[in-house]
Each structure stands twice: as structure tokens, then as C-alpha cells.
Image (cartoon, rainbow, N blue to C red; front, side, top):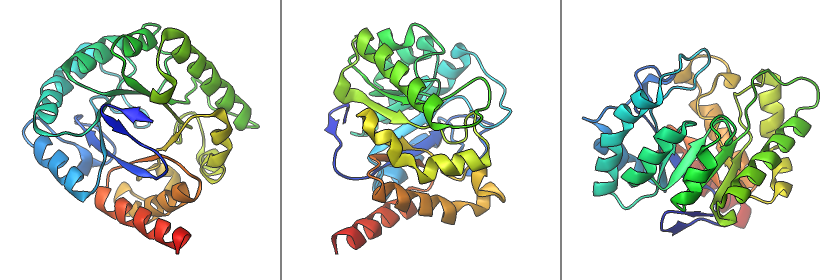
Amino acid sequence: MIIGNKNFQNYTYVMAIINLTPDSFWKESRKTCDNVLFAVEKAVKDGATVIDIGAQSSRPNYVEVSADEEISRFEKPLELIKQNFDVPVSVDTYFSKSARIALETGADMINDIWGLTHDCGMAEIIAQFNASVCIMHNAKNALSGNIWRPITEFLQNSVKIALESGISKEKICLDGGIGFAKNKDQNHELLNGYERLLPLGYPLLLGTSRKSMFGGLPEERLPQTIESTRLAVRKSVLFVRVHDVKENVEAIKEEYAKING
């Protein structure tokens, strides 16, 4: 997969979460314009190969903020990151207005938790800037019964939207949407069968970092996150999106050593 000037393949890479929100569920991930460069510098030093910045929390029961509020949160930090680091940057948004400003400011990818379905102008804007996209499964109502059919049908439909809008195939990745419209058991079923999304024909991104599916408090969920990252390696997932870069990078290296040793 191509993001910015980098080509990612045949490995599991770490995407670092940088939250520019006051209400993200993991408080240690919350950054501001004052400390975002320090956070990105540490993430890159620790082995992150993509930075994902978000200006709207998507935690359970979050209160949506407007595109204008999103833009006011991410525009300056994004500009600073692009000025100071040669690293691909993804912006987490489902508003086309936010996406346009992000891409004009230098973002390389849009990470859309509604898989191009929330805002009908999103796919066209991504294509216009020849940018990359992460398409995530989501639903307005919680899934029931067999989870695989609605997930795969949603992702297939979103890919169709992307391709018909002119987004390049090599600039698309898919996310099964762990923690979105799924209960705890469904989240674990999705995680344990994540390779079932590979036949869709696109690289995968896994986002489990410190999520509630692991139980306990966010502060206590790093070991389970790392185990899911090890699982991602074994299932040929291209990206893991995490808060704790260093620990997950080490887990990936260890897992590949086992596979190749």
C-alpha cells in the first residue's frame, strides 16, 4: 500500500495514535499544539512508520463536534508535523470539509470510521488529492447474528465507492472496525478471524489498542493489546494502530523472529 511517498508491504507496521481531543478514552494519548511535536518525535523514534491524528473522539458515547471544530484542532499541529518530519500522516475524520483542509495542509491519508458512507463528498475529495484512505466498517445499529456478512458487504460497497470515485487501488486499506457496532464477543470473534477479511483483496489495518473489549481500565490493557498485535503479525495484517509504539514495535519484531527462526 502507498501512503505519501512510502510503500508498505510484506510486514506489520505501526501507526501511532496522536489524539488532539480533550476527551479521548485513553488520557495519555491526548495532545495539544504545544506538545504534539514531542509526541510525534517519540513515536517515530520508537518505530512508528505512520502518524494518525484525530481531532474527534470516537470513544463510546462520545459527543460529536463539528468539522470546523475538528479543523481548528488539527490544522496547526498537522502543519507543524509535516514541516518537521518526513513521515506519512493520516487524519481521522468522516467529514469531507475536514478532509479537504487536512489534505490541503499536507495529510497523506484519510482514516474514515464510516468507510466513505457518512459524507457523500468524501471519496471524491480523497481522489482529487490522489490521497490514500483507510475504510473502516461501521453501522448505525449493533450487529446481530453472523457478523461476517454485514462487515464484508459494507467494506465491499465502500471499496466500490472509492474505486468509482477515482481512488487508486494501491492506496486503499480496510479496517474491520473493532469496537464499532459490535459487542465484546463480536469484537473477539472479529479479532480472532481477522484473516477472513483478506480475500477482499486489500491490506488490513487492525485497531484494538487499549479498547474496552479487553476489560478492566484503559491503563491495564497494554498486555492484551500487545497480544493482539502479535496475532496481527500471524494473520498478515499490514498496520496496527496503537497508542504504545515502542512496546508494539518490539512485539512485532519478536513475532517475526519466531516465524522466521
